[in-house]
Length: 111
Image 1 (cartoon, rainbow, N blue to C red):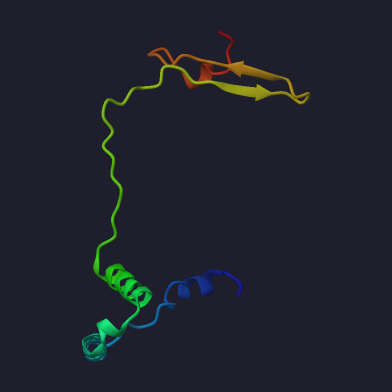
Image 2 (cartoon, rainbow, N blue to C red; image 1 turned 135 degrees about the vertical axis):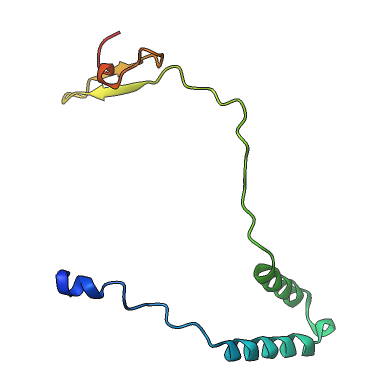
């Protein structure tokens, strides 16, 4: 399908996700799940089946954890280093200092 002004008008209008389940159907599914869970004979399960059941239950009931780290005492870099290679493979290394006089246009100047 070509993308032009006509097809662009319809882009995004057709949802790929489909409609949400109606509330009555969701309630029925929740009741069915509750019935199945209540009818389970937990003592008859093997150890691996119990672990798998616990895994599935925890995955759907616990919130996902996120890792957060507080950065304390951030230090501004005082120098950067980069190299520029020519066609023969010769590399010139530059190490400009990042002070209050630093300017990007001065990066390739010799120190």
